[in-house]
Image 1: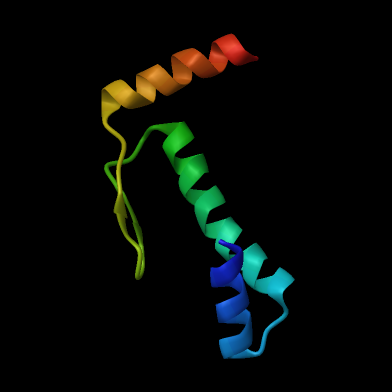
Image 2: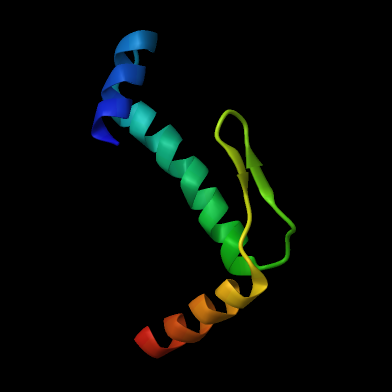
Length: 68
């Protein structure tokens, strides 16, 4: 991911930290939506459509509780 951040920062003449914040915020949003579990899919422009199978979401939630 570092290489992508560097390329974008250079191309748009932005600080690398700003680019990293923008990129990570997109994935954090997807993560939060997935954790809520009330969605059909999530579309990130230019990256695609993300979805989680219900059984996989149940598996994640079950194992997350054991880790806490």
